[in-house]
Length: 111
Figure 1 (cartoon, rainbow, N blue to C red):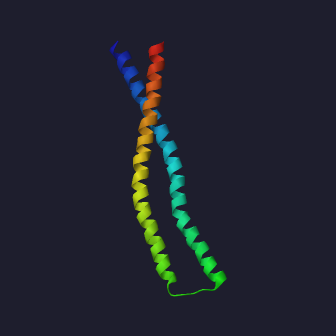
Figure 2 (cartoon, one colour):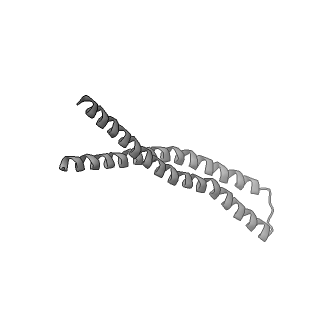
Figure 3 (cartoon, rainbow, N blue to C red):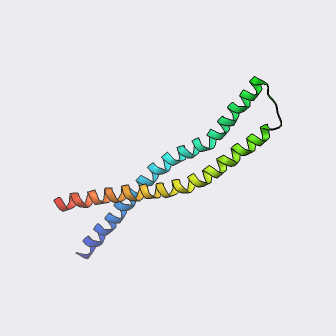
């Protein structure tokens, strides 16, 4: 009897860990793509800005001022967004895992 209870408890723990790890992988995959976009977006914007400067032929000394302001703005924005993404990601993982575990428990009680 004790072995059956321990076996089922170990099985439940492994199932819960499997669910948690599965949702963690899904959320990490989405957030990795988002972080890649966040890394390349400022580079693309500045690249298009440089192309526009070359096409219009306006070279002024204030270019570096706008360049510096743009990247300072980007760094300040990302310093707010990245911690928020961590909180949202952990919340999503926990909520989805709890719903899945609750669904499994509900299905077992119905039997």
